[in-house]
Length: 106
Image (cartoon, rainbow, N blue to C red; front, top):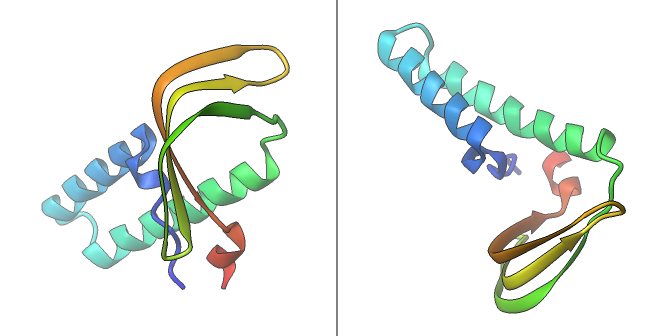
């Protein structure tokens, strides 16, 4: 199974995609190489989150919508509260996308 494209909609992912698009348009990169860079980006982000992040967060809120499609869970929470050991943050609306990282290595 191909890697999930979860991190491409983050700020860094969108900037990388934009830069790669410019490089393909300028002829600096082939579209195939640009795609491979994006796939590696997704794998690197997944690996970094699995190995580097040690903090745990508790999330509470009103579950507005949830769905499970193609082994990916999507949750939309309203009036969510994020808590870790030190801080608490309230968010009006948040979308959480989750998948099984083991599927990335298959």
